[in-house]
Length: 135
Image 1 (tube, rainbow, N blue to C red):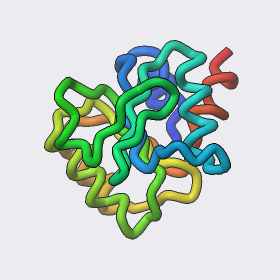
Image 2 (tube, rainbow, N blue to C red):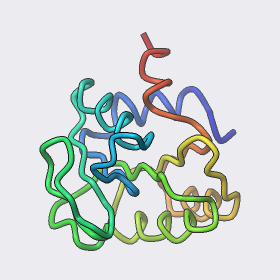
Image 3 (cartoon, rainbow, N blue to C red):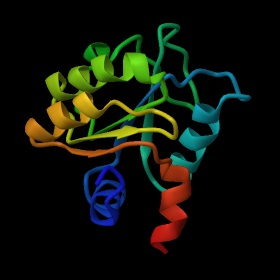
Image 4 (tube, rainbow, N blue to C red):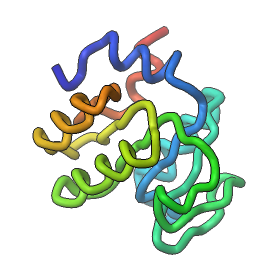
């Protein structure tokens, strides 16, 4: 249910091109850095969301989702599961169209809240792995 192929396809191909990546910093050793690069190569605009608000991959960073001054289509979450539910709620409040929890990030209650709000959601998957699978 949390990794429904059609939902994954819809988010990656039809939801929109602006992805807020929560947890993305300039640390090249972190998975978020590499995944953001893959998203950019596939035509997505990647917006870093991190307390440091660093510019990453040429995009200005913001300390929180609420600080982003333009619409975001997908919120990609690279924080631990204990913090992920709060970010999911912020994504709903910010008007995102979808939420994506990365590999190892799982919060069943957050999933239920996001889906009840009418957004698509994927948990425990990585878009950098899923994009090539779509062909």
